Image (cartoon, rainbow, N blue to C red):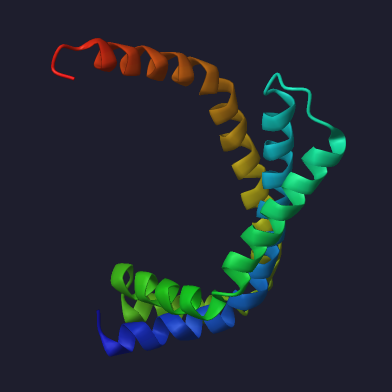
Amino acid sequence: MSPEGLAAAEKLLEAMDYDELMARVVDGMVVEQRTQVRTMLEQSGEDISPELIEDVTEVMQRHSRNIIMDNLDELRTATAHIYAANMSAEDLERLAVLQADPVMKRFNAAMPAMMQDTLALTMGLMMEAQPAMQSELTEVIARHLESPSN
């Protein structure tokens, strides 16, 4: 990656208001994580109190938020390197200019909610498929443990 590409990527992240975007993404991620953890705990078959579910989700939310927000500088730098490695300096410069367009501003404002909705769809599919995956994993592990080579 070129120094020009990295500089252009950094300008793009600044034009995108990367820190604010990440804060909104984290907020959306945490909401979805809370829903998924609550669902997983409720479906565990165990008698789990609502208070325990609340406490567990609060801890997970806090840690998730802190992991990302406490490492935002490193994430921004790494993201700039990823952008620079995958896009030309010219493309990154053009994207930075486009950030001033009102449509891009609206798109960026809507992005966290759109990502949250997409994550909810994806996690819903994963949760739906989890029993079949667990069943197959149980079979694979049992076959492996029964194998004479173990």
